[in-house]
Image 1 (cartoon, rainbow, N blue to C red):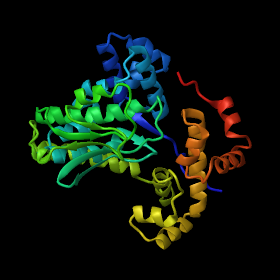
Image 2 (tube, rainbow, N blue to C red):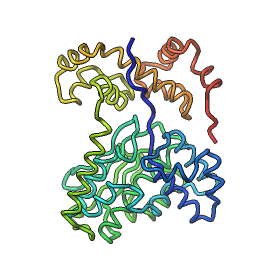
Image 3 (tube, rainbow, N blue to C red):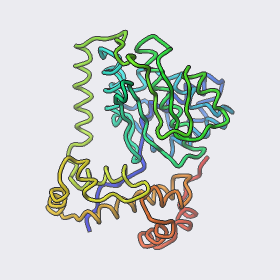
Image 4 (spheres, rainbow, N blue to C red):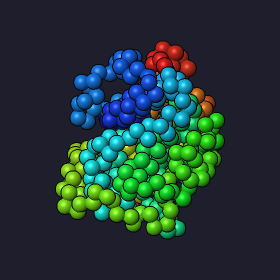
Length: 347
């Protein structure tokens, strides 16, 4: 049987490791030994396009929280984020004509700085309010709270930088329940924060999106925009229909497995068209679904802190038992045994 390109949990630009270290230094923590612990060198971090896996990034965040004794470390990371930490999309957004154009472009170019199998962030207008929404990474645990915190906090920081104003948000929505450090959210965002919401989002006040950015330059924006679009196109260049389908399957697995019609709709075609194109490449949709699940299952068991019930849900299995049967069929051993033999240490 053919194999699709390996599907992983995701990766993230080392620019965000730079932000993490900058935040540690602000708290008088040694970031040099911290880097050595994760076998990262300054030379690697300074390499253009260098990335690390999402599981390693979450372990680093968890360790930074432990070292600093700051549960709100992710919120602090946003405070110490610079435009340059977002690379070319950051510079493009800085030169956009207004906040709407800046935020829409920045979030649309998310794949240039991070990729997560769980989904993609969005910028949109809802009931006359601009929304910056980070996708769900539930179920939540001590290793991923800070990812939501740092993402929303860094977006807020860029909005402040672009507009030179603080009173910008109507409210913030957080998907997980209120944590012990809940007070720090309102201190950071300067607005009400609604925990246990249906999404992770910054909700701007009406009309804020029309504010001009202080560094607006139409010519510069168009120039950097072209560079970003070329880079984004290069990431997708040469991908087969099967690989594109696999990428979309990863974002639609939670709770239930997507159908070929679901994936075809996301690809802008009819189900029968996708089926024909996959057949031309020697594929059946079910084979792609199985290989995608297998690849993700191995990554979740080896690299994540999720229990097997959570993994079964994330992969769209009807029950933990169904997941464990499938895993044993794929690897010849149970997920528990595989984790004991292969699990990387969660520091």
